[in-house]
Every structure is written in structure tokens, then in C-alpha cells.
Length: 147
Image (cartoon, rainbow, N blue to C red; front, side, top):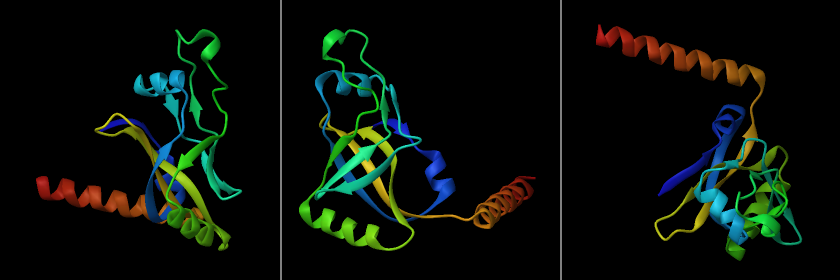
């Protein structure tokens, strides 16, 4: 498995409830750019439209040798999930405060691009401060144990 893009900010801004692995429909020049690592998923999110999961805001830079075959870098892209999983996600997203965010994008062992999609609940500022304080306390304890 080759990690292509990671969304560290998602774990900082959201409580992760559940994760799913989804395939992603890409064109030929897009997959070449993905394999080169020219992907950003920082501001991306997923929505369910007409029974399909669509990823919005993901940026795949155009392939340099792609010429006329290149497509819009931030176009919406379809995520490939089983029907049962989509029905489950519809149930989650109808609840107040839950959203779908991609955590990371990678190339699996068979050469296919995959996105790890999370059902997430937004954090408040005091939750973020609490997590930072907890992390600092753990870091200080580890340093004290090493000394």
C-alpha cells in the first residue's frame, strides 16, 4: 500500500465515528498524477447525491504530459461503494452533525486508487484544546520516563 495523500486536519477537526474504504472513479491522466503523489484532500468532503457518493473539493494536479486529456483538477469524483454501505451512509448523514470526510488516499496492492472515508462529527474549540492538552501531557510523561 502506497500512501498518496493524508488529511491530518480531519482528525484534529472531527471525532471519527466509523471508516469505510471506497474506490474512486478517475480518468487515465488523473491516475497517473495520483501515482506521482500530486493530490490534495485537505478541503475535500463527500456528499450523497441521487444514491451515489460524490467527493467534492479534492485537487488532483493535471498530468504534465496529459495535454488535451487532462480534466478539471477539482471536479467532483464518484466514490465506489456497495449499495448497503451507501444506504448506511445515508442514514448517518441524515443525523444532525455528521458528515463524510476523506482521511487518506492510497494505492492498494493491486494498483487501484482507494479513499478512506470517515463518518465524522465536528469538534468544538474546547474539544480541540482538550486534545492538545492531553497530547502534551502524554509527551511530558514519555520524556520523564526516558530521563
